[in-house]
Image (cartoon, rainbow, N blue to C red; front, side, top):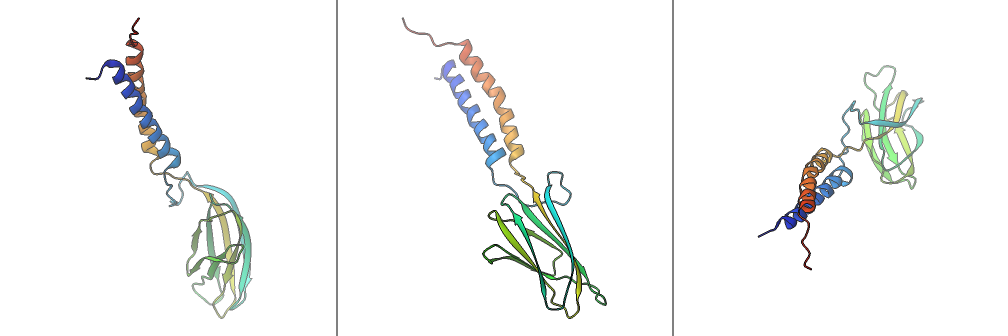
Length: 178
């Protein structure tokens, strides 16, 4: 049989476990890297825009610096006289010239850097006519942890259990043998 003091200690242990689990959910759980358009938690850190003519079968290179906690979004739009749709091919390289991402026919490219580095963005015009390219590169910080709300709930649930455990321990002090 468990006496009252042991019940208080057990309640404090359970409450401590709930708080630790809640802290893990809020700060250490795996983040979700999906960024919904227009989400208020999406914060733009920096943005650069470029506009240039790209000659046929050639490319243009842009350099930018990014950190691992940023999500790089590249928006490309282009037009060419006499063509209905013109979307260039996009290549992303790191400072060691390793190809990290490539997109053909995509207006949006998302890229998450693995390290802080200088990155190179190459835009290639595969068409026989020159194209006028508009390009925007922006860095976002979006750290959404799906388990964070559960973490807050666990911490809130632990508070009355802490109160119960402390009340039992304070009201029933251990009787010392003299």
